[in-house]
Image 1 (cartoon, rainbow, N blue to C red):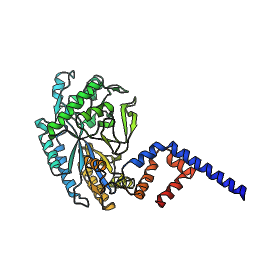
Image 2: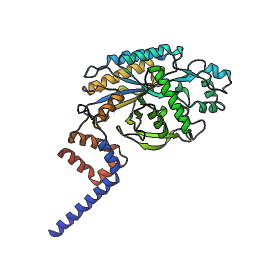
Image 3: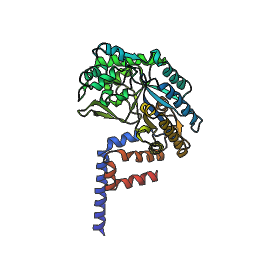
Image 4: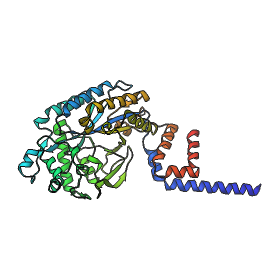
Length: 401
């Protein structure tokens, strides 16, 4: 019996030691997910990019979107909210063509041709269904387009088009604003050029909306510390991310050179708060209403807000179907989660920073439950925890709490 007891004690010691090694090996991501705020209520924010300077058909689409959002109300009676990632210029095709593509000229969002688009946008802002965000002065780096146009006729044709252009029709790698992707892999822009460009786009935002932007989302999610620092100097307090930061386009044109990852509530070196937007919902690509519901349920179990990424192209390419799918998705989300609330990104950040007890969970058991759900996203941890029996221990701790 004594020998058996000794063997059991040794086995237990070995298991405990193994668990300790695993926890130490994954200590950083485990601790990060424990520190991440846990929401007490389900939250959904529809985030839509690429609006602003561009096709004039946006005016009617924005009015239809605003009417749709007003029809969908959360449990407090608040209408659904959609952020608009706004760009403030497109190429002035006629002027560029007159120079044989040797000079770049822009058509600003303040131009009279965009009056109806701006009015529709402002009307939605005033009624509380649209929230503007800084997406960029433009959805590209102009000097890169000029270089690319010398060898790519499709880029040249896009630059000299007579009607306001759709940035969605550019090659995807050229849609990144904060790198020079005229050739691949991309090259880093000079800090002075980034600073000047950030200053210019903040001024453009202020000219349209009357105040400096507080929330920014980089085009194609390619940006760096220099961009964040430039935004911070101009008053940007919140940065929308996909949970990681790409700083280049690789040889295949894909976002790459990931230099950091982040969770909601983390801070940038320049002091901004990060939010994570990672539920992808594009009706024109065949995404159905259930995709939005599934994203909400998964994020709610994790104690996170569901930030939904969608783009203007859905409503330009298939307006009726995309509007119907969005409305069906929002109504299905309300049916699946009757306590669902609609917020803006800045409101969410303020509740997190103020640790608002109505919104932010402080009780141990709900926090532990959300934390356990978040652990499945840590690469390799779930498999290692299951094989070692650590997953069972974590489940027992959750129930004990």
